[in-house]
Structures are given as structure tokens and as C-alpha cells.
Length: 404
Image 1 (spheres, helix red, strand yellow):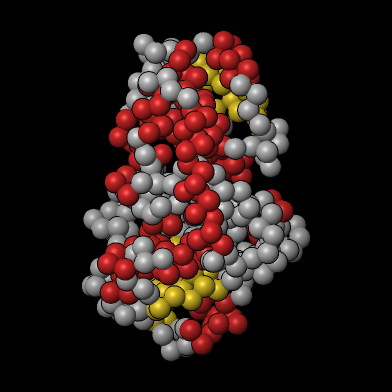
Image 2 (cartoon, one colour):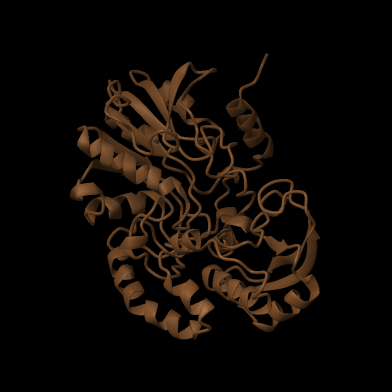
């Protein structure tokens, strides 16, 4: 019997499960909210991460409910199976095992159209996020919320943990002129929220297009506390995208992703994306020494060499640095990423190049790049963020759903 990609993931989840998870996701708790779905045609915005703690895939959970029809899937960046590379546009399709249409929300449109919603009464969102502003799944969610509001559909979020915990918040607030699909709203890079909490904030703050508000319901988790990292939940980590290979990757991603906006390899095309970085023109040993001199909280650096099989410097030997996490609770990944970019710029001014528009989109401002190129004080720049960050935290507090 031929196994689908989803079935293979399910087998993996079951095989690696050794004990019952202490955290129950929104999908685990869905039976307490049957009234939202009974007699309805459901459209599910999802991918390969939508398993409950027992290893059951979302469509199978809905099918067990009875009197509920799963009418359509909607897939984000990386596709319904999570196998497509970043930035690759995806076509709509029919899922061959379930014979259900899959409408791509990372192809001809980023937002469900009226036609896509014709046979849908309720839109459900269930995708594992990783806690960084520029990870696109949360904007797939928000644009779908807009579509739900515009077309009179209820929108339900099945909540999941923020894998890098829900306490730490870090970074500057995105400026409106830098709003793109890697950052649409005025939030910091590390937001410290779950998808359900973000959905409530997007909806109630009037951030959706034209101030639209959707009929929103968040099905909460049970047992999750804000201080929990993902490996404390008992849930099994399924990499949410091809290069988000582990919790360690997610831990450093909100800082090391900034290297995408430069000509330095961020480790894509290697077994350790975002956990190592380099370029053919870097001297590994000297850069390692200089980075360790920064005494960044929670990380150290070790010299490495690697050869990417894709992305920047494909099939070329790169010299660089591996990130060693020494204390993830002390680590400030975004600030560390800024200082890493700054140090490489200082050491290699002739070789280093900006991909300026993308770097600014990731940062949500041009001020960081401009400060680095002008050799201005980054500490003073960081201080200038604090008032806006404090205001954001006051807004954020209104939408938090879980204890510390």
C-alpha cells in the first residue's frame, strides 16, 4: 500500500512518542467545541504540522466528529506537506489521498478568494509557528482572517505553543513603510505569543485591512505555560519548514535569519541552517575569535567549514562559524544577530555585501543597516527602541491567554 506524505509523518510521530504529552493543543481540545463545526463545511488552513498529542492528523480528527464536512485545505508557504523551499510559489492541487482540493495561499494569491470560500462555512487555522515576526505562517493566518471577515465566515484558531517560550520579547517594532509578507504589523521580531494570541491582537487592534473584524474563536491549549520551551511540552517537534530543522534552529532563527539580507550564507543547504554561517572569503578562526570577544549572552562560537548543496555558494566551500547555545534563557537572538552582521561588516568591508531591501524588510526598518554602514552606536539605537517596545508590551498583555 502506498503511503501518503502525511501518513509517513504520522508513523514518525507515533514511533517517536514515548509518553503522553503534558500539553494538549487546540486540536486535542476540539471535541469541547463541536458546536462550532456541527453541520458545517470546514476549510482548514494547515500543513504537515497539524497533529494532536496522540499522533492524529487534523482531517482525521474532524472526520471522527461526524456531521462535519472537510471541504477544502488551504496551504501556506512550503506547501501542504512542508517540503517546498522558502519563497517558492506553489500551485493549488487536489490532495490525492483525501481527494480534497488544496488551495495555495503562497502562489497566485496570498489570501483566500471569494471563489475558494464558496463551499466553506468555517475557516480553521492550525499550523505550528516558531515565534519570529518574519515567519510567514502568521500572515497567512491574518490574511485568511480578512477573507473570513469580508465573506461572513467564522474563523477558528486551534492554538499551539510558541516553541521558543512565551515570555521573552525582543527587538524593534516594525515601521509601517516596511510592511511586507515577512512582517505586516507593528510587533517586535520576537513577539512571545501564540498564534491564537496573535489572532486576537490582529483582530481587536484593527490591524486587518480596513479595520475588518472577523468572527474569531480561539480553541486554547491545556497545560501550556509561557515559560515552556517546546521540549518541555511532551509534544514531538515536527520541523515546520525545510530549514527549521530543530528547536535549536528556532532558538537562533530570529537573529541569524538577518544573514539572508547579506551575501553571507546562513547555512541553508547544509544540515545546520541558521546554526552555522559563512562565506568563501571568511577566515573561520579569526572571525570566531572576534565573535567570542563580544561575550554575547547565551552563545559561543566555533570555527567550521561547510559546502552548501543549495542556496548561496552552492557547491562552494565556505569558511565560517557554528553557533553553540550555552544558555537559551539568556540568549538574545535578534540582538546577537545584529552584532554578528556588524562584526562581519567591520572585518570584511570589501567582500561583505548587503541585500539591502530584504535586510530592511526583515528588520522592519532601515535604521539598523544604516547604523552599521555609518558605524554608529548600536547600543544607542537599541535604547531608542525601548519606548515603542514598552507600549507594545502593554498592548500585548491584553491578549495573553496563558499563565507564566
